[in-house]
Figure 1 (tube, helix red, strand yellow):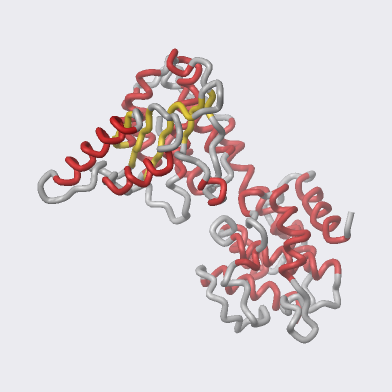
Figure 2 (cartoon, rainbow, N blue to C red):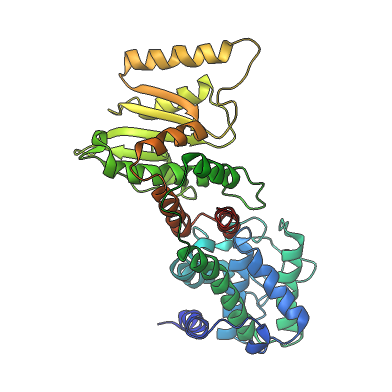
Length: 379
């Protein structure tokens, strides 16, 4: 095992084997400003993945090579090194293994805000969206290089905070027990509150997808239509190459692997003739027999003066039915979920399934989980 990997794994093991210190003084990070800086990075890690990756890269490089000024993150700088190569080889693979929710696809240095021809000094011009995070990131590196602060203590503190962040809320949700009987209207109100909350972090569009997927998991067991059919695993929104090969968000295939039924879900976008056309291009060469286009937008069909768009939508649906044989169904997400809940044997089981999927999905942010916890605590 190479030195950088030893440092990363060693730090992870050290903080994961001991109780989480709520006070970072336990890690000898006893300066209040230091604690504020590292906490700001951890708090924003899901929306500022590149910065978090860059900081970990610099910390590990400093630990393994103390003489290196880690602010000089490009080889063309005098005395510099290739942080991108170091990250790609050691840090991002580690994050994919240990902290997949904040792992970049290849490297933090693929972000324009980080990949700048300027050292990570306090006047670094990179346009990091969160000004507070940018300031804290640069202050930490300045502290290490100018004040001889201990990079390992920063790394241990960051890993401690990340582990707390990603395990605490999930542990709480793990222990939630839902009522054995819940009214469908109550479930719908919970979902409304979750879907339409004003989130500060991206990724809310995944929530209705997970809800529909959870329902299909239950319907696959309960409904004769899906006998001998298979529900495909959800694809990552963060892997566009993979997503491009899909014909929808939720996909059911038959015994031969041919598409049987597919659901495409739009978030805050009304369904229009052009959206249906785009979907038809994706599935026209398949044998799919039913294709749902659902949206969280209300009304669910784009409004125009008169009834022009609605008429065009209906005409296109009929043309697809005649040409291809597929039944295209357009609807709002809430009415559709309400209908699906009537089909499953135990509607309340949906709450448990949805919660489990939220916990496991790597694209669901901590904020989404905390809002859901707040919603279900009121049941």
